[in-house]
Image (cartoon, rainbow, N blue to C red; front, side, top):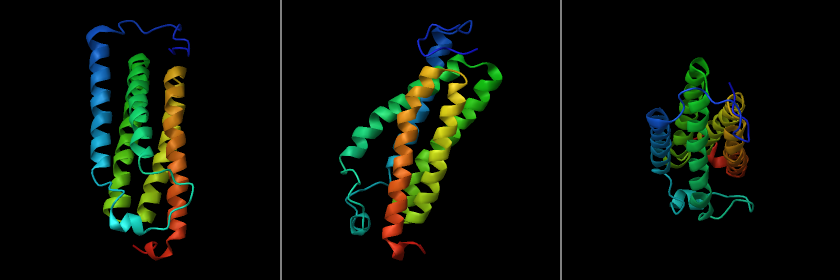
Length: 177
């Protein structure tokens, strides 16, 4: 059963109350944990990061938390909303896809900033981008509005992959790390 973008589609019986609160709470907590874990190693003022040759189209440092805050809110809402409306079998697959996506999301900062390895960051962000678009596809099968809420996240991660690839290309001395 699928909710429409207008929200007027057939709703699954029993959606609401404690079950809904539990799903929204669990997903929001998981997304928040991924955000905290993933941001721990990131320090844009770090000497290593500052020394990298970066493209002129890289956003300023202040833009990243400004962009990520609503993206994480969108992930939490879309994940919760689609899980709440999915049938049991689809819900399990969707939850696994969301969990895998959040693991990749958390891993980027550790691969790029902590390990100081642009190529590892590129590998993670490439996998993350693919995972994001897969999550949009899976979510669309359950709820169009939730899938639409994930498109900015998938787009930003795709942009981040392009940015990471350009940083890797511009810093050939970092390729072997």
